[in-house]
Image 1 (cartoon, rainbow, N blue to C red):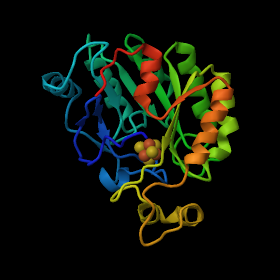
Image 2 (cartoon, helix red, strand yellow; image 1 turned 60 degrees about the vertical axis):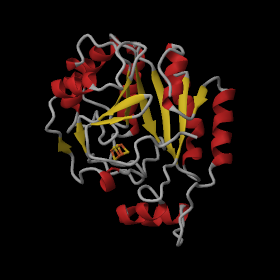
Image 3 (cartoon, protein in one colour; image 1 turned 90 degrees about the vertical axis):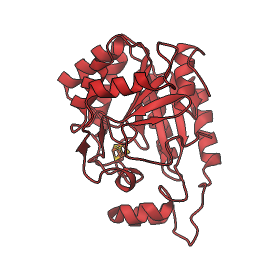
Length: 281
Ligand code: SF4
């Protein structure tokens, strides 16, 4: 199971785990995906951080947990924001540029598709280091739960350009929404095959006692309550783990038959691509 390493949440730009450091160059996100934990734990409206990119880099380098270099600490951008959304992309690019000669791996998980100018800057910043773009999605085409993010057509263009750049693309199917995400298995596989994407991460739905539980979805996204009601009936004690094991296993098997490697954890995908060198806990 993919652990939930960012709990307990805290509004701070750096969150350390044994494997990596999560870097949030801004806070919040305008998309308000139905399943997202950010409205509960980060700024309700997209908010810039007061920490400069240079300060972020200095803080990272000064931390005793940090290990420098291509086999060192993975820098995971996002966490408390959508790092390629319009409110955040400039800060993200500035941070990547401020990394300078540091060769640490960078992973970016995104549901966004930046403008062509930002996209090319992003590619230039990532091509010189171990990096990967995790294209997050819970659905494809039928845009219901993540409707505040760019349409499938626009994301398709971004995925295409990233794949052409040589930067590894990974399908990041997370959170797997039971009775919904599995409907798109064929579309995900066709997308991956079309762009020669070799890896997919299939992650479980966040269910925690306080944040991303079923009641939270109802409270936080009342406009989606009817849809969610059908998928996750609210009870006095929401299930800690949706019974999605069989559906996840079926998706994993389908990907496997198509020759796409799957894991449940993004760092495993990075290790598959870049070897086993990156530090583990
Ligand atoms: S795009 Fe990402 S950060 Fe933004 S609301 Fe959706 S899941 Fe949350």
